[in-house]
Image (tube, rainbow, N blue to C red; front, side):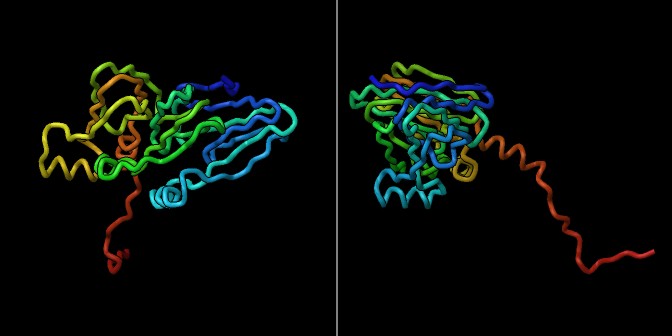
Length: 241
């Protein structure tokens, strides 16, 4: 077991990740997550998941490239920051064939020995108002992921129900299906598609599930009320005294 040394700082509201690389040790990082690093660390861009899957991620509005950071010749520190304020979670894959499913915007970094791939959700992703892709991490090594808000770890033993907007990651030993809460109706369907509301994910089996304590679309809806709106007064009207 060759774990990468790290420290999660400023959790859970504004967590960042410090990775302590040994000489000639590498880590794979989501493009744009690097905040600062020692000068001995070198970066090299990489692609993962095959051409078609990479194109699919590009059309979904996600970054196409991952980056590999290597401490050349001596140890160095690398500081990584998620895109939204929240928490950072570490998980170690033991190489037993079981993987980890992570919301595509939550991936921060992993060991080079961890294979990062995309898993198409189809209409489940469309109707939940979320990204069309989940990342699947398999192999052996470290992986770090982030959330909007704090992260809650739930050990599932049997079944569990979660609003789709709060899912951060889960072990692929869990089965899941997305359903509408309160029965299928036109109004429920309209609300679910446009607002990402009214949908829950039913998990079954045994494994770990990670939830975030806040939902990003709720924040967007809250801030929308304070959005400046242009006046609709007629352009031909004028006043004089």
